[in-house]
Image (cartoon, rainbow, N blue to C red):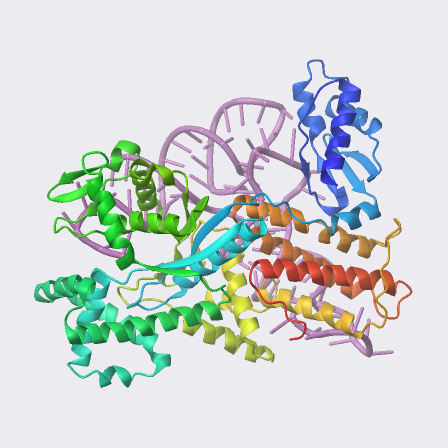
Length: 551
RNA sequence: GCGCCCGUAGCUCAGCUGGAUAGAGCGUCUGUCUUCGGAACAGAAAGUCGGCGGUUCGAAUCCGUCCGGGCGCACCA
């Protein structure tokens, strides 16, 4: 349909001016039609002898030569825009169009969560996980075969810090751990890590001890150490999996651990010393400054592989497991430059993986009180946020369901453009009105309730006789595929949120002003409502937000 | 110091391959309720799009510069 309109304009320009143009259609304000184009304005620049009357005259010539069955009306407006109205039948066809599958046949692997064990899961983790999971959905909607994986730091300094506090707490008696109730474990782990971090900073003997405990995380030969580690490791992943499920994330297919990536990464770095990496102060470093990224240590002077080496190893593991065309890693923006370096290094020593990995960075989640820091224990734990949303629903007088809680949280995190900082406002996250997840869910449930009460389900063709409110709704439904395509092209879920919110607004307006059941146009309107619920649900599904029939 | 990002209504944000009167939500104020679900709808007030300069018929959008804020820059992850 869009191509038909574009072609009609191209043909008209050819007829009137004997030149080829690129036509760019936009979706203008509804009062300006279904599509608009500034082709005449562009043409004014391109044509050597501009006709008398300027862009508006050019637009007139185009409109005069416009002939196409899908266009009902074309008008010239403003400095020379051409506004186009489709026939209602064309609009109805647009409304059932499927998005383009631009990634059909491609294999994609994406990390959809990566909180570290031995630390608390906070809202920053939730934010990243929700964004990554939704991007995975978008990739799947574009036709790709998507493999969801996760990656976690199970070894290293942060483990040493937590183990320092944990071993002190346990003091040889494992029952002390077993006494901690499951709902308290996340904050317990958070405290253990924060205490360990503080000790590391303040106390040099503690620092030495923590370094030993960090090294011990690789072999875990000490019996008590191993037992405490295993218990807390299990707790951590129970918490991670539970929270990811509560957030509505799809399950992962494979979990990677840093301890698994370590050996491969270390080998790769060592095999490329002299070519890609150089020795410096006993460490193996990548001199990224030669390539416009910063210098970074991959292997420490003690010979241990660091985070960067493990990321290299992880790339190889993923490649061996899935042979993907693309691999996405969603991280906080703090790691943006770091990833540029790792990706650059990987291009040099793993040429087969060239162009495979893309780092998508999400903005920093900040609190109104300042930046979150898990080192200081200054974080908003995700369970606390679940409770806040639950309370807000109760206050509203609604029935609390996991679907609404998850919907509220997901939508809040997805509705703004990814990449820039997010100042996290709890009151707004918890809001159920206006531009929010529950608003959309409600708008869905309400429409479903009309359909449930309807007796007839006759399908109708729209013979270019739609009433105003009906046409507005159909027009908006017809933008669905474009919204999906926009989201996929940019890998930006917020485009979908914006569209769905507008769609629900148009429906709510329609709902207030047009009686469906018992009206003379019941059949036509019922069909519209059915198309609307179908579209809204499809959009919410893309965001992994449940669309309940009742709430 | 070097590099990257951000600055749009009181608050939180859309809009950025340049285009029509810069749009939402929250908050504030005013309405709608014998009708399909009021988590709704209708309306009002609120903006030098950080400042200045440039490119252009046309700039929130592109370029330069300054101011303000954030992040990153060698053995943490």
